[in-house]
Length: 482
Image (tube, rainbow, N blue to C red; front, side, top):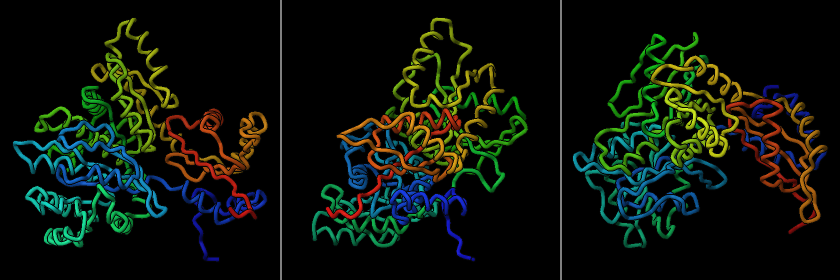
């Protein structure tokens, strides 16, 4: 029998047994297969939205994601904390990276635009290039076109601000950019965005290539992330100097993140340093935004995010945002509390209280207390990274998972709501990196109960250092038409 089916993380025998169980509980085979496939998808494909300031990128991003999240002030230099969003069109999910709010450096517009676009493009599977059709192609637009050509990524051209028939002719002039057909849209009114997104889906891969790791057995990729001045570069230098570094600075300009091959504990790792905001970006809000973009690009390329926290400072909102970015990206996570050697007893007491209250979302991540300056506890970094990777790649056999779910449902049933008591009927792990589970239930499971299930999964199976994704499919009522 040559007909090979991809059952996600399930082997053939396990898959057959699982589908029989699903049939017994009244689930349609196609529905179950669809749920496993959807839950089993790894990282979503990434679309970078690029273009010069004030062409309507953020308004278009809001239109694509279907909610008003990206900042859309006219004022240049609006601080942006969030650069990556999740979107869905025609049943397909993908990530959108909004590169709006570029701080154009008055001393070198092209250099600044290129520097900031490059990180977004580097982390993307395809690009949506937005041009203001009422203005036409400018020199800055031409600079972005050169950048896109050099990157070699698929591009869709959006001719924005076409609010009626009269604007169609303006859009047609953008054929001159040499990027193929310009799609006339109005991000403000939604005109033409459906056709644009249909084209975007043609350019995006169903599942993105794994950017992390080289071939099997290649060096594992680690992103050092954290807010400015937490000691990312110092940590990298300390690690490199102490352990006979093999430095492999990727060819390119100073704006490339530096990848370093470093041997630690007898293993070669590839560290992506996200420090070093370019000096030419003068305005602080622009620098902050640029740091976010750079961090997002580094996380996309990594398997493990080592998040550095400066222990001499209070844990800040910015720290929280960086943690959220890493968790949502689904990477393995290690928390490194840096500058530990500088703490007095009082600060240490308050820090522990802060960790209890502010770090709840990553209570499962391995923690190391280090000093990049003195090298304190550097030897604990690699075991923590290995632990996080092991959790990230852990797979629970379906039989064992269902025995565990059965015990939970018996001992801790879901609360009764509206006279009904939803039950988890069965489940499977649809994927790893990070672990992704799909649970099939007789009714809607509340968020609190899902969190309880996640907590118990961690207690039972480990999963240290990794986010866990749980999706729930509710059995549809049969035989009753709505």
